[in-house]
Image (cartoon, rainbow, N blue to C red; front, side, top):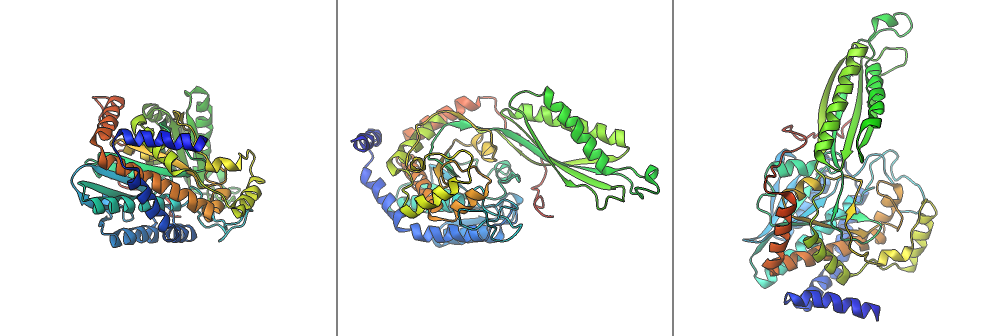
Length: 475
């Protein structure tokens, strides 16, 4: 009875706009028929993970699939070899779909419910971007098929967006004007539950600080040396004291990426990589300026030289409740992930390794819509301040699984991940269909977007006018 009431509610929502539910059912059926094909694509990306700005094979695979479907491909956009757009149709509205595909370093993992690296030290899809890129591909193709079969005016555009993990790939694409003509964006992300929430997250600035000193024999002539590592450690000490004097929810992370070559040599060169986060991009800029001053002070105190390079910078996400309501209704129509007995057995083994497991049946549920404040960061924030953006998460991982974990990689290589991917693909494709059909929906979405952004907003990338950091993942 509960499911019948839920379906009636969704049906009433759609009927309000005069939509034929049979169109939506047909689209869902078409995607179901191609699940095996999209699973093959996602599995290939999972088996061959590539780091940010190095995703040559991943980008080419997605481009080839879209070209076969009649999309016009524009390669190497925004000065990034692995970034691309794929466009089908003409006229308004223009609906964009975001697709990521980069992996994370050191996260290699077999599709088994225990820790086992596929290739020791190799990258892995610990944030589910193989599913992200493929699911978005499937949604774009389904939307294309709808435009083609109905002859409706409209344009669907897939954005191949590299280097989300710290490389700020979308920021350069926004800066290049690639979203200027887009009416709305639909997107998604891998997760451990099914949600469609208006939400925000944390803005970021990241960069590398490089200290240069003078090498010398650490025992025979230490007085002649000037340690670059001392500069790094001095900077870190100052920044760690700074933590006491920042506003909530400031987050400061760092890792020493170069500390010298041998302990008996005073290090001539050293490097530390910082990420600053806050819910307000202006506060991020203010904290970043103080971190730079700490680096300058450390250089003076250790008689070393310091240079720094901003690697990335992203806005906090601008929510859009009108678009999320539409996506939530469509996700409710689609439904969550159905586990087989084999899936349940896998999930139970994974949950033994998790500190806070959640009910396995929650993978099949759609969570109520609510406004959320996230603590992660993503370059979709910049997109959301330039184009109305809606996004969902789906249960591609065993409930309770955190992102950036081997457990996420493991489930992402199984049918659990591929089922969640198809929930996202259907939700996005149905939402694109709604936006193509009903101009009033877009009017509501745009009105909220303009109100939240404000009349005086002017976009300025937090990473300035630097060129894409194409080598940030290279050793």
